[in-house]
Image 1 (cartoon, rainbow, N blue to C red):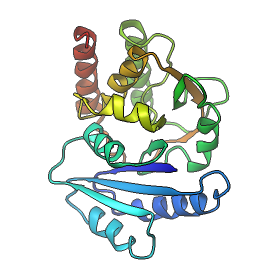
Image 2 (image 1 turned 180 degrees about the horizontal axis):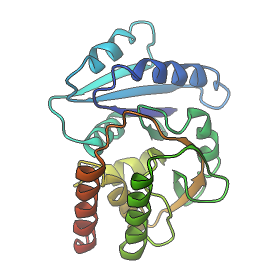
Image 3 (image 1 turned 180 degrees about the vertical axis):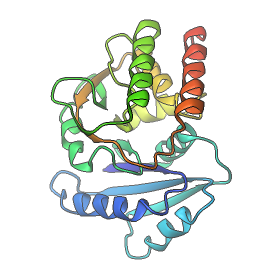
Length: 236
């Protein structure tokens, strides 16, 4: 069984097309995934994100919606979805589908043996960035990833792409005690997976920058950097 977690904050405009794309792909992938579920985690949205998603559940039994009572951050939303999921494989993907769901097959092919995590990457061979972020955003992203490699996660070139696949066992182990509720959560989860002895496959994927991103370049970049420093200081 496959679980797909979609963290969503004020995504009423983009969510319908995303859910439609997920349903078309997953209903057509029956030979690989005999059963699946899609979990939308509404992160205290101020718009109709939750209501819109809930309106689709009657005609789509594989869809369910979790509502967080207030805005807690992307990490908290992914954590809630991962721990509520029941899939043997658990993917989280951004609500704007910057990485198309069709790229899932690439990640799935890398899960084997001690390789229990596969992450989409924009910075390795076979990746293809079709629509770039503004230059300042790309520069901040590259700077963050270099610091991350230097301090805590050597060998991983892009930890912030919002397209990651975990086995169910690893998802539970890595998300249960999550301390980073916002955008720096990826690094904490991946570091915990490594410390527990699991291998991480970094897989080149297609990626397209989506306009109207929910990421604030200055505020969220500074917050993510502070999260990295906290992670470096902590040893647990």
